[in-house]
Length: 109
Image (cartoon, rainbow, N blue to C red; front, side, top):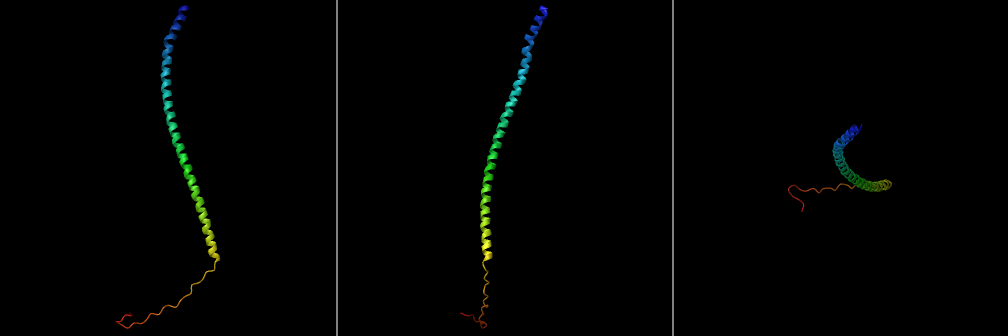
């Protein structure tokens, strides 16, 4: 019994570091990959946040321009309505001016 216990303890002492060493290498590799993925995702997140900020600025500019154009449109509609209300004066037709007859070969001075 003592020999088997001793042998079992000896096996554990020898193989346990080897088993944990292999697992440790796998864990370190996995940890390194995860850190790289995290860094990549962090950079992508920053890029996307910058895009969102840019889109927000563009959206505000478009809103301002839309408001300006709506004001201009309203103003032009009012002008059209005021022009429709005014009576239209018909232009007076003048008789066409008569041309002076010139003698052939002579030009009026």
